[in-house]
Length: 263
Length: 262
Image (tube, rainbow over all chains, first blue to last red; front, top):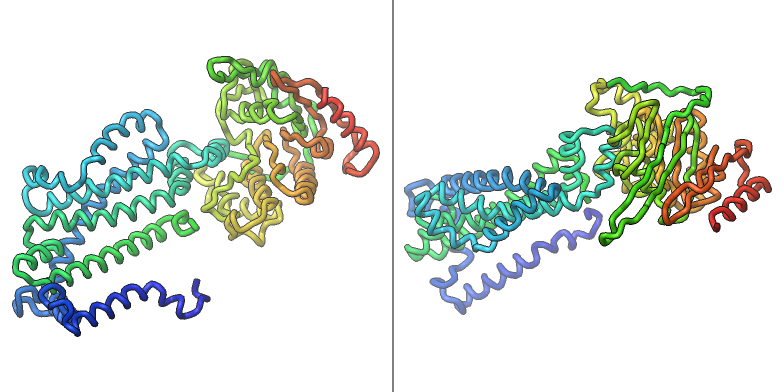
């Protein structure tokens, strides 16, 4: 990849760059008024205050760290819960017919319910805040993780497991040394999809009026008519989502040979 | 569990039968109608003997090997190895598969070491053994390559090394060279014979290739189908090393082709 020409490296930035240019033009010429879409200059100023400003200097100054920590914590908790249940359950149902038979009807039934319709119920159960958000995040992240783990475990070539058996490998080592590495590309795909969904449901959970978090800031800014803050929030969520995906991938590559060596 | 890891270079071929196969049958059910994939298979394999199981496709020769390795239980019959009954897969009967059965996420060296891990050998002795078997299959230079980065012949050499390192009593080979090109196949056959001379394992080698069987075998079991059974048990008396171009070789091949046709 790296021996491609310089221009090739710029490829991913063409769309954001072009978008930004158009945005700059429509704001500069006044085609779209500032109360609908603020000028990029104002956005960056707001972003700067939000991230680096001193708390107390303005309504949103310096809140980023608290909000991001709160949001990241919620995503991390919901996602880990989903992963720690989804991966083993998915692997079992991919390998054992009776587990698949036991679970598939219920899982698919629950999956058919849009995540957003759990919001009212979870507000009643868990109230506003941490618990509701974690509940929504883990519920939503569970399905892609579970389904991909099951598909991955099912797709493992029986020859590999037979090879293990004839070399005298027991059940437990066979699971960790053969099954999981062989299903790694599916597992990774599921976890990454799950993490993506986690961010979506984080915002949903935080829109309900929690005091902090990136979703909360967006909702709060809507009430006070600060479109610039809304956009700053969106951009930051995009950046954090991207970085967490990168982090997840790096972590898996660090921990598993199979993740490093999967083409 | 203590496996003897030393390479025994000279082991006298004992006339004692190591592997007894008695009355093996297997019946598959296809749409409710029973299908005799194998019927009443009987034979013995002596220690250090190289036996080829030759037959047309669909005669159940691979099924027979799967039964011997313990992957499928037979419907009837008994298998004993050195006096002990055989039920489950285990490292005393190692398999070299036709397809690519190496672990794609492990390097050549890691694949070879795989079977030794987790049985209480120190990491040093595992490393030593791995080195020894890497050099036995001439792959020292490729130790850190992944299976997808090496050729088909090399892959099968890794597949051989990773089971030989476990010092199996019987080596079961299921058309291991069928997917290779003609030239590599010949090289691998010669290579297998060299290894066999050094290590003198008992080998059961399934093939549909007459030339391959005549090149390798002490004995050839010719199978027929519907139901799958052993029709002929032929001793190959050609002296080793065998010349694939010699008249005697061709005579043997012709004879076998005739047997396969009937």
